[in-house]
Image (cartoon, rainbow, N blue to C red; front, side):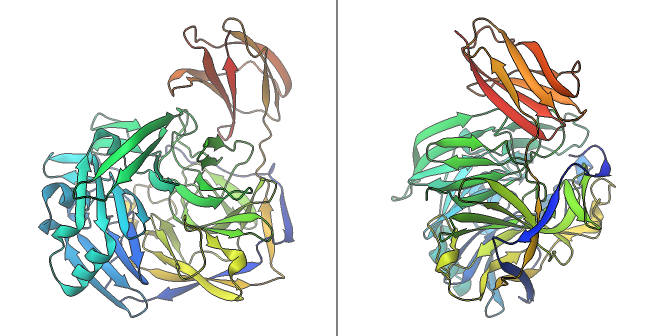
Length: 532
């Protein structure tokens, strides 16, 4: 996953203290549910204040050795109903279900979305007895949340509360599932079959989705089906997995999502830092902004203040390429475990800003955890909390459950994954109004920009101009509009400051191509180029 350690203080980033546009302290309070095991990378739903928890893993971060990674005996084979208010939980085994259901529902990193009283689960990765190998499951499953929870609490059969269909379009793990209008959005992820191998030896096959797969689901009858299936592919900007998909309210009031960070870049084993907005009308890479403090799947929540037209996304712990140490922002390319709690805010003009909260997670934890929102609060259909409709100065926005707990920030890099475990902790997350709160803003602006001309161009050669703010690696990717990478490489003959050069698009059979420059393995910029 991560090849090297590179540690230094980022002197070029500027930090300022400012009165907060989000005047709330974050307060974490441990909650005990006696005997509930630790889990990470699971799926969940909720009803009447109780949680339904399915799948995930009972061990910690996966081992580096193929024979020891993702052992079957650490699959979570129980479905849990959790009553966090009354310190109770109930369970039922998935092994009583049909083979296809049983195998999928004990997998890890499934894509899931709760739509009313139905939980939809797609894909997931785990050992399959049927295949006698680790696979990404090619399944879409619908679950009657209320019926299943009642059956588990009453100790009766759970078999009748599931429907399942198979198809290659569902073979995704490590992506996210959302919904806009009547359409479901299966965003990013990858198909990974076989045993994990950090040296890329041939113990597995892996194909990134690099796409948004859109479809409608018909769950009305005895059989499950999908319709209006459509795929949007981008080999560069959608090449992501193990990220956070945060529900959003955009400045014009439109509901959608933002892809936050995720891994791995095409030309480097590093996270993407810039977000991608997803709306009904398409997807929109926000390459003008980098998010530094949260790069991996963790607990997250969205809150919108309609009075100021500001959207706030909160992230809890996890793993990150950047973190604070002694007041300085440190870059560590091994992407270690961190304690950071951070916020990305979209202000009314659409600009994005990132802040660190003064409070941290209690330990190195949060990767693979889930934030379970308090649905008693006013919220939009995509679960963004309506901040301006809450009158209280103190209120619980939800709970964090599970994730990976590590006693070492560098457990994976040091081949010490035994220092990690599935975290059984539950934290109540409360916001407390604090009008005097001062927060630290990070300069997430992109200092690299380039122009091309002429555009449209006749032939394959264009003129490229760019300004290099300092000396660093400069990579390029040429991709087609249907998501194929045509060419990639590096530019070495340039200087600090203004540069101008001829550039060969290497795409004689394409009428429209996308040229992406990647400066210093962190700043992306793309241009669409039309050929006459």
